[in-house]
Every structure is written in C-alpha cells, then in structure tokens.
Length: 284
Ligand SMILES: O=C(O)CCC(=O)C(=O)O
Image 1: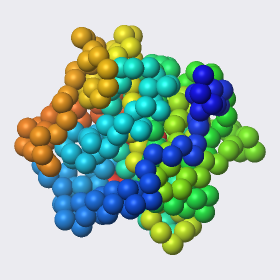
Image 2: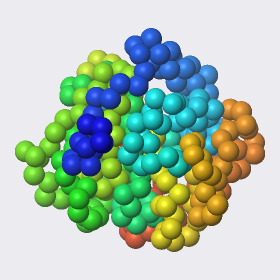
Image 3: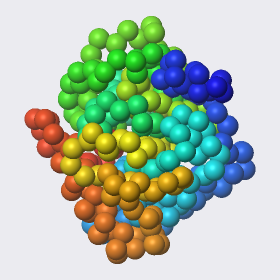
Image 4: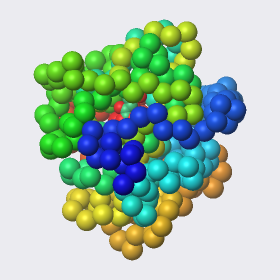
C-alpha cells in the first residue's frame, strides 16, 4: 500500500501531495481570476460566486476539466478504486486579511450519502495556503467514528451554509495541513476539519473536488447527480452528467437548476432556518 493511502486510512486525511507545478498553478489561478474579472455577474440568475460555491463543474468547463486532471485521479483512485465520479467542484476563497473561517464539521453530514467511506475531497491549493493564510486543520482518526452531532450557528463569517459546527473538539489534537501552491490534500467525508481566518496579504484560493464511487448510491435515498471521470459508468444509482457544453450553456444552466432543487432539499433537511445553498460565502 502506498504511504499516502496508509496515512489517509489511519488519519482520515493526507496533505502535501504534489499535483501542479508552480507555472501550471499560476496559469490556473490566472484563469480563475479572469473568470472573476469577466463573468462576475454569472448567468441564469446566479452570480459567479454561487457557481464557485457548489457544482461549478456543471456549467464551467475549466472546473470540469480540472476535476479530470490525471495526476489527481491517479491519487484518488488509490483511495476509492477505479470507478470515479465527481459530485461537486467548489472554490473556497478567503480574501487577503479577511475574517472568514470554517467551523469544525464533517462534510457528508447533510449530503444524503449516509456514512459512506466512498467519498473523498481532493483540495488543491491555487495560492500559498499557509497556517497564516488559514489552511485546513484536521483531527486525526476522527473519520473512524460515525457522523457527530452538528449545531447550526449560521455565523456570519462562517463559509459553511448552515455554519454547522461540532462542539467540544479538543483543539490540541488538531493538525494543520498547510499547502504550497499546486499541492493537494485529501480528506475523508467523516474527518473533522476546520480552518481559520486569512491573516496573509494574498487571497487564499482552494479548489475542492468531491469524488465518489458508484457504491455511494447503493443505500442512499432519493436521487443525485454526478459526472463519471474514470472507469465504468454506473448502470444505476447516480444520474450521470456529461459535463458542460460551454461556459454557462443554457442547457447546462437548466440542469444546474434541477440539481440545485434536488440537492438543496437534502442539504436543508432538519435545519430550523432557511438554508441558501447559493448564498454569498455559503459553501456546503
Ligand atoms: O477551505 C476550507 O478552509 C475548508 C474546506 C472544507 O471544509 C472542505 O473542502 O470540505
């Protein structure tokens, strides 16, 4: 077994895996920032920030293409096996010297996937993601238990949609996962993780790609959508999508709406306040 696979299985996360060279990552950042400069208004009634926050791969070709990067898929295949789909592509951007944080949480709590081991996030640094810039922190081994109770805080500076938070974390157990531009971390859907404010003078830009397998849907209720990116296309379970026909293509925008409605119902289940899946600063 590779070292990174062993470390992931033991700790629920692994950090510092190289994916892009310095010049590649600089070019990618430039492409993201060009989109921000030229398409901030977004399309179909949603601003660009909202597409960056969830399911960007449905309408933005660059994000779909990034989720198919062979160097990322090779690593993810070591964890999840040969048949891979992308459930969501998101950007976690904290502006320079901004107060935004992410509270302690487990990703799959509200994703309608049960307590699956078949989901992993590949989080790629498109800028310097140092401790000062608010890199992620993880609690080693926390993925080995089930889903913990989360309290909805709806806190203003929290990037999560419900400000959901696990109480009583022993922070002395936490490990930082700083990343140089072009490096990636992987975290398990049940691994407790959080991140602090960006106290650096540069933006902190992270690309989060949520990979799943066909098996996730074996015991999951309702319907859900994913984009096959490697191996066998599942015969059932997932509603498979092909990826965008062009930037903000009308047919993809319509699909985006259908997915939004279906997934928002799952995300909001049990919340006692309206959950805006696409709120500015509201990630899943
Ligand atoms: O970007 C961050 O600081 C947190 C990201 C996160 O919670 C996630 O990718 O699941």
